Image 1: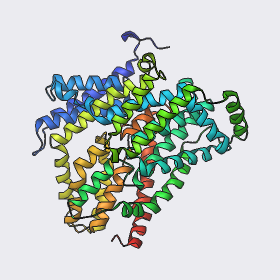
Image 2 (image 1 turned 180 degrees about the vertical axis):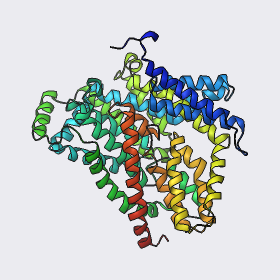
Image 3 (image 1 turned 60 degrees about the horizontal axis):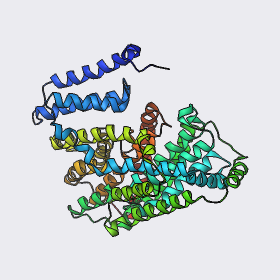
Image 4 (image 1 turned 90 degrees about the vertical axis):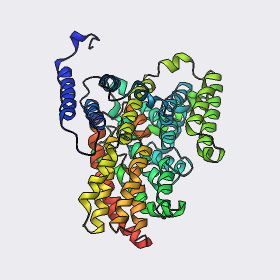
Length: 476
């Protein structure tokens, strides 16, 4: 095992680290463009070096994030107050709380019981298990405005329990048995269901509101209708593509239903701890679903659930301290969100918008729309939140589209739908990505590589087949 002292660190780690530093210095020293402040340019240099550090992994992601924010403070690119502003974001704590709710399901055995129920009914084939999980996400999506809560607090614990029931655990090096496929498929199922309903993701109502400021009214039903055909096709096709590109080692499990039934008999009746966990789980789910009507924030709901777990001794403080994934995410995700926010506040995003507009003028509107959607999609590499991305760029890109003659409803709905689909980029693309990636079932290179390929399929399905469906609906 590798020792934790500096002499034992492989030289390749230092080479990777020095490469990240070199990239930051090179970008830093390049004269910043007119219209971009020196501070914004320096922030970009540190941000790009940080992302490169996440990719090359000279140190763990959390360590890379700490080093990056330290350099940003030392160089006066950000203040100490700004450096830690990301830790106050609601989305960060929602992700952290989701880890603890997941631990409660696992510790009580309720997660395993639910998993065995799934195995009993859908366990003959791995692909069947996958579709049943995605179907659960689909059922919950219309009434769950936080896709992070849906994926992290509800679906992820079930997927983890299912995987471990088959002996698939990243801690044992057996993640590829079945867990990697199920976890990554759920991530994409979550992306698709988030796009299908206006109320399935926090940034969707924001996109609707921003479109309304241009006089474009998107109703709940018109959104659903526009997303219906490409959404259903995606739910069927994308898991199958993942199955082919990232196949599980266990494909057929004919004895699984019988094994699950025997395991359920051995577990016996619900224990008191399971009953309490189930009640807390149901309460959290109801508050997540009805939070908009009750004016209860999704993060507050997660805190309520976490507090109840502590009050009823489902979790003790040692459980909380030992949940390494939660604390790791708290550090690196908070720092990354802060950096992405700074790029927007310092005007770099608006500068990039102006460049896009200048290079599109004069082209036919279909070319302009496709170009805008493509740029909108891939620009998500510099964002750690869909809401932040929509806030920064949706109105700008919609205004460009309208100015260049793109049919208003088509422009508004296309950008709104891809504000969900652009999560098929990085492991920090949104809350669900952060939670599911942090489970350890899918390595970073696979996460980025497979997402890039699947992103191309989203363009084919949603801009290709989708545009034909939208023409039939009279959207343009």
